[in-house]
Amino acid sequence: METILLGDSEADLNRAAELIKNGGIVGIPTETVYGLGADASNPDAVKRIFEAKGRPADNPLIVHLSDFSQAEKYTTSIPELARRIADRFCPGPLTIVLPKNDMIPMITSGGLYTVGIRVPSHSVMHRIIELSGCPIAAPSANTSGLPSPTSAAHVMDDMAGKIEAVVDGGQSEFGVESTVISVENESSVRILRPGSVTKDMLLEICGEVIIDHAILHELEDGQTAASPGMKYKHYSPKADVVMIEGNIKAFTEYVENHMENGVYSLIYDGDTECFPYQYMTYGRNSSEQAHWIFQRLRELDEIGAKKVFVRAPAVDGVGLAVYNRLIRAAGFEVIRL
Ligand code: TXA
Ligand code: MG
Image (tube, rainbow, N blue to C red; front, side):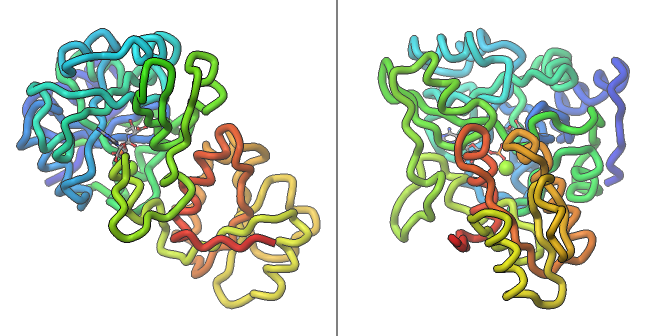
């Protein structure tokens, strides 16, 4: 199959929407990362998403809508707290897990009786949902296990020949996937996957925000994940990634003592002055690091890095999301200096 590259003209968005309406799968831009979109209510189309990604069947897909009010159509009930959170953060980089109804096939929800609902703010994605008239199931558009795509070129790298089209909507703004939450009770939510809607932002509306244990810890044998995606090795480039916590002086010493062929370091923009080894930088603060992290992991593969020492991000605010992705890229290998 030839994968066509579409732009963001109304004609091209119409074409993307038609492909989705007719059971095709299309790479589409969102404000977080690029998604692999298909009609969420069409089991055959959704099956093709799992095949194209090589994704385990028990990992549920997020359903994207153009307005949160449409969530009524696909869920059995929406808690008052979920409505207040949606009022504040939708459209935006947030996914709310709700009890699903029969409009969402079990293949889409990975066998769960819940569905993650997200209303993206990216104008191109929003328009494609409107034009297609479909709820759009869309996981990140990477091959399972690889870093998520933040540009149309990344999607082409992973998906050319496997999907109908990719819509180029520019570089993703946030760079890490949406925050995924479930509602625990009338005042409390649980973060299942951290993203750009942070714990502090949610605390403006919720009495309590629980950070799920699986966000920072490896699941032990027999434990089940509230969010199935958390149990898989993820986001990893081909290179061996090691995350190192400590200041740049301690980091530099560590690299010096562990130098070998093909080592690159991924450090902060402000770290470079006295750093004598091969490196890339990934921003000055957590939101810049979120924006660049997946792109840098892909670039490190392109230049043939064998091993990557990453200077760990701060774990507060959006940094928690960056840390969560990196600890998985590193297979939970963290050096604390
Ligand atoms: O920003 C995003 O969320 C992107 C863009 C394309 O919207 N999508 C995305 O989808 O990251 P995906 O499939 O790569 O990650 C979805 C995550 C997985 O970890 C999955 O396990 C979790 O959300 N998830 C989805 N539905 C769920 C549900 N019903 N209950 C618990 N976790 C769920
Ligand atoms: Mg993903």
